[in-house]
Amino acid sequence: MKLKNEFRIIVNLLLVTIVLLATSCVDGFKETELFTSSVRNTTLLSPDSIVFTPSSANDTLVTISWPVVFGAGGYQVSFYKVDDPNNPVVVGTENQVVDGCSTTRALAPDTKYKAVVKTLGNTTYNNKDALAATIASYSTFVPANATIPSGTDLYQYFTANPIQASPATQVYQLEAGGSYTMTGDIPTGLVNITFRGDKITHPTVTMSSGKFISDGAGFNLSTINFDCTNFTGTGLITFNSSLNTSSPNYLAGWSGIAVPTTSPVSVRSCKITGLIAPLIYDNGVKYALGTLVISDCIIGQNTLTKNLISMAGGMVKDLTLSKSTFYNTQIATGGYLIQYANSTNVSKIIGSGWANSTVTLTNSTFWQMNKLNKIANYSGMSQSYNKLTLLYDIFVDTGNQRILKDLCINATMARNIGYNTYWFNGVFATAEITSGYDTGSTDIQTDPQLKDPANGDFTVQGANQISARLGDPRWLP
Image (cartoon, rainbow, N blue to C red; front, side, top):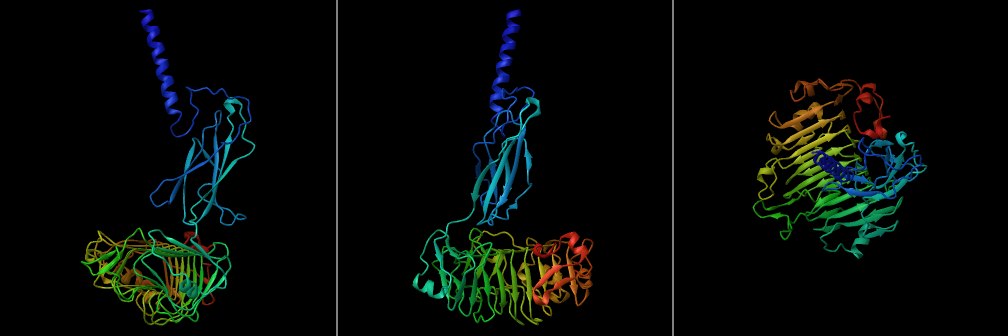
């Protein structure tokens, strides 16, 4: 009996050892009561390596991991954007204490990062913090196919170097602080294209005529300023007036082109001024964009009658306007912020597989947009499977006191609305609340006190808006 008990004890000890060995590799190293480190009375070293693993299909998250340092009491971790190395911007919690060997952070496209991981001591074993952290770089910056020198007329450049058919996104880099002109059309065909500037010192493109013309592919503008003061084109980003039926996105049953959500159209971190034509224009032809994103932009119109997003022949499945400022130097009597073909909705775009549409306006500032006209014209969005999200926005002299009526279409459209300010002709626009689409229970009904919008300064001075963090974040203290 005694031998059997001893054998049973030995077996149990072996099982505990096996479990410890197996679990010590899961979720990093963690000291437990069942484990005693042999590393004692030591000044520890930081991990000898850092590994970055994108952890989502569209690379919006990254897992940062490192090997275990025995005897550690944890790790101090920071992750920074370092597009401007002299002014790093923290992502997530700075100096986060991690009890394990990994953590996750958010990613943005075309961004440079660094991770800083420092080993912390362990008083149980009298181990001290590492004297230095381990630093490693990571980047979502896609290499450019070509860099276009400052001083170039983009029309002449692409006439001499036409865009070639390619299954991969073609990236064209403009020089930091560079000056460019555009005097004619640039056709991009069926190629997904990115035109990119510099995050710290944007290049400027002075538009006179011409436009970017897509046959129904993805198209992205990033970190570029566009001076459209003397622009005579029909739209900045346009779609070909002749449908390319050889496009893989052409839907014969709909007789149009539906650009998939995997090929977005986006304008990010751009400043566009003096726009007298639409920013997005479908030529009145059946194009349906899966994804259209305008983010971190300042977009200024100078027009009485033109739409900003003009999809009169088709529509956008998922539209997002976020962390941006939209304004018009004219008191517009016509034109819309958003126009889709009224007869079009996702159920009619045969073969796309789309089930619903969304319109999302968040953390943005709107001044004098469509002041004396409707802000939206898209009655095809009225189905209950479509959704409007309207959160943390500031609307001043915008939408003729019918923003909600026109964005919601009717009470059938699903919606998430709140924490907005509607200010019109110096008073709160009560018509927005009495319309019945927003109870007003969370809205800020005081003057946002934009500092000098007529001269391009949209700094928020209203204490209530500042406290609630309404509008484009760049104008908040």
